[in-house]
Image 1 (cartoon, rainbow over the protein chains, first blue to last red):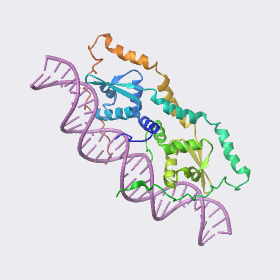
Image 2 (spheres, rainbow over the protein chains, first blue to last red):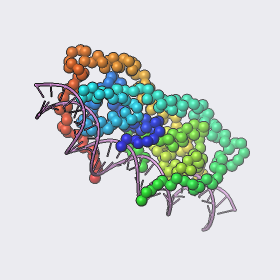
Image 3 (cartoon, rainbow over the protein chains, first blue to last red):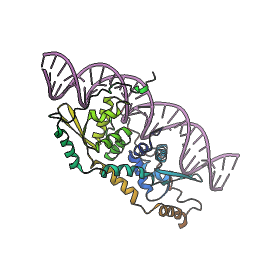
Length: 139
Length: 139
DNA sequence: TGGTTAATTAACCAACATGGCAATTACCAG
DNA sequence: CTGGTAATTGCCATGTTGGTTAATTAACCA
């Protein structure tokens, strides 16, 4: 299970796309904790193995690290893993002028002399069915 | 398809957990665009309907908005939708002392007089199979 | 050695996500 | 009205996710 082989950013985003997992991370903010402790708030809603799996997803995304001590596994937050997400986010929240600028740029597109009602009627979709990968149905 | 009925933050994270969708958002950074234009860079790898579906995921996450103009749909980035993600991220990147502080807190736990080798042997798992929700399989 | 506790693994299942192709809708141009 | 172009919708196949229970591993305790 667990996200298999996608790019790291996708793996991280996917790991964060679950309220249980986010709650676990939030809890870990207040210090490392064992699996049992972490699971406690969720045992009314799901079993221990389910929590184990969530932890594994977080671990594969690099968001936590586990260490073994006697029969307990201590889980610890790995905050730097969030940098990847932060970088992407910052790029998309700041690297552009403003909503208005973009709207203007958009409205200005047809002003420079092409189609009357709509901008750039896309330069033909001739790349159409050229050589697509075809989704391997193995039937 | 498309993420159904989870909480908004999960929906947004899930929408971002796909490289195609992130690429679409990045492209939209440079201005609004029609579905056809947006699809162009991906047509070597997937069909138009597939792109349409990705756009729907982004739309349901509030990350883009679509408007109809003649037979073209213009897609526009909705940056404020990223605030939700940003807030969560900031909370988890800053609202805690530092890796070292947390490690110390962790190591200090058993110092204050309980079990010899390991901290807080969790106060019994007696909430075990009490009354779990049982995974609402709607049959 | 045997029992208990912590956590994981295994096998299974339902629901969902993502892709494909074909058909359809929606709009414009003659 | 017909044809063409843009995009969506419907249905289907497949893989992944998130949960279950039962069994297992690992470590401590007596």
